[in-house]
Length: 193
Image: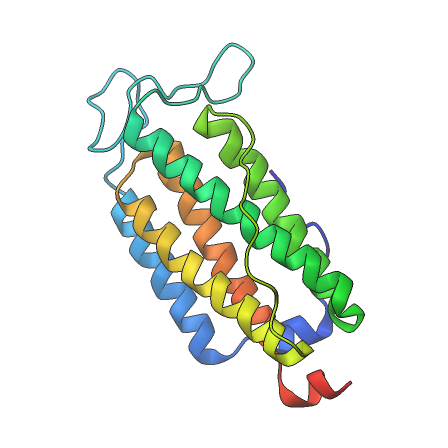
């Protein structure tokens, strides 16, 4: 699954602050430390929250888990990602000045959603509609950045409770959401443009 649908723009690279970079590194390092004990070996004992049947099928794609906790975690994450993708799409229509940024974020979420749906073993995630976006570009972008950051934390916590490919996918989604939250943070000068 490619992680770079489009190269970073000059503005998105500038928006990453030292604090955000350190927070993302800490989140990634913590998740990596938790996942270090995970076992993907189908012959070995499954780790807590894992499923020894979550191996690759004959087509090379991972077989969806049958563990109810794993299916629930992956389905919940897929629904949350679908919701934020809807919100990003709505914001890109309302605020054309941020369309490139929002489209890039939506592409990331589309890729993550496809993978989450694949590993959850359930049908495509459906997302109930969210409340309307706040009025004004700056308020809408702040709302999107806050939602991304909250999802990042929720998905990192969910990843810590799982193991194997499911945990890695949720950790990857959490790291991407943390970076997206940073890239969606609007500086006052940028909002005025």
